[in-house]
Length: 295
Image (tube, rainbow, N blue to C red; front, side):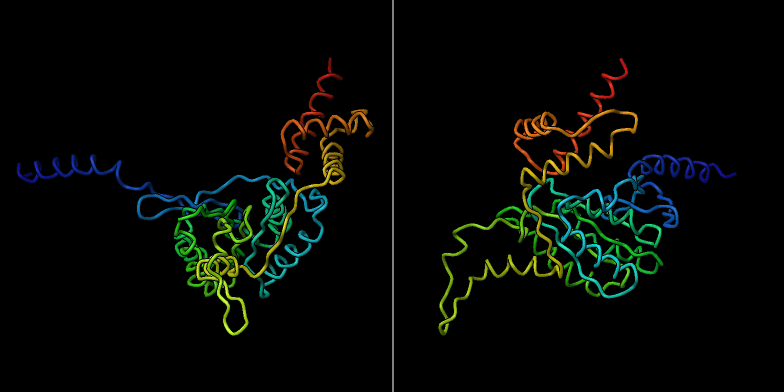
């Protein structure tokens, strides 16, 4: 072999060795027959879907005290799974009240019928058209799920979401839908100063353009579901449900005033009285009770 060719090949190997760490890794295609959930990861100028191992042990019946919200989103999801018209959904309200849990429970409910979930972070919403393109021709039904969606004052990123909803999802194939959760109804901070420039036109009160712009964002979601802070009665009902669910049959226990007071003290100590707090107390109480019986 010519020495010049050998030298060229050696230098080419050296260049490739230096470039290899900079190149994105080859990602195997997801088998959506077996995989029911994935998360979008941005990588360089592109990204990829990472399969997730998710538990399907959360049932719709585990969500106590949110019957109206549960029924509305369940109906919307059934329409979607059945190939009928359905709406993008915004679940907004107090933290820990079951918004994300409701979406995951619906995945467990309909995974066997072809429902799949793709998590995408707020900062990656501009990549949504790329994700849609990857699943457009598949037989499964895909919910794009953005958890804890919100935008701070001064950020212009919320306009990206508006364009994404109008520009990609509403014209996307009918096997794609967007569900998002947020602590804010309009996804952006609402301040008193927003009301300072309202105008009276022909006897009608018109909001300023900033307010219109913010409201228009949440208007892209056809279904709004509101989640409110728990009352004490609601909180205790959720605590009791989770203790009944987590406690094995051979654990002797009863729901009484002492247990109620312990749950209330737990919530007061954390400054939260919601479903997440109730679940955490139930785990702590059942775990401690089982530890004491094993001694």
